[in-house]
Length: 115
Length: 188
Image (cartoon, rainbow over the protein chains, first blue to last red):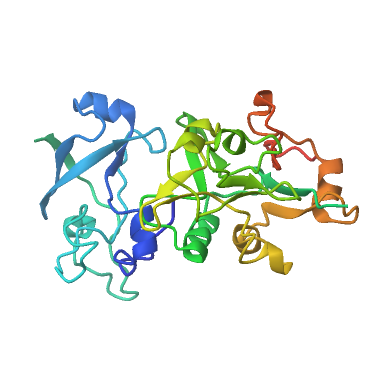
């Protein structure tokens, strides 16, 4: 459900009430292969970072893909509602940008490990 | 002749955007964790054959309202046009109406300490010849509201063109809210 805009709106009360967390979407087959049940905590890891996340098992994602909304996992304590909630997926993304157009990477491969 | 209000919810147009539920929350100051209006979403099917279904859940203003007949203090009452209201001065929050409502439309407002539910925006809008907030804000025009006694109204014309489903019709509460069921892309 498209509730929040980029990383800006996560502390807005009406929107925070509708979506306050960003568990990672995972297909049931993938979850079963990694021994994960709904709501389990697990690690996503790549060459850049290793992050802890919660799983949301749904048919609405390809078995070879994971999805997470952006803009969560806020650091600033003054964002009283959003602070500390959810995962910051951008920590797994590279900071490299393309030479001419400046576009950056938004999809990245990760390894799933159980906690 | 009194009014015969009807609210139509078009399942084919609803995109589950939650604009109606947020607008209702803003209009009536509904406390967090409680709702007068909800649009529930469900993902159906197995990948890759998937579909979303949405369902509006709020008071349906029954003609034969169980919440009115069980209220011990007459706080839950019906006006001459059949709309069910709550008299906050005499509600004792016994919760009998909450139990009696088959649509789970009622809740206790912890700030005002009385029972609350969707009121079709009667006080704030309908009594001033405006549309309820959810109807006026819906971006896909999935909601229609009007008087069935006005034969040129949108609700009257739509009711006679489309198949309607009344939620929990088997309970014979005679709701004023009806759904236009999903046609899955077929023309009406």
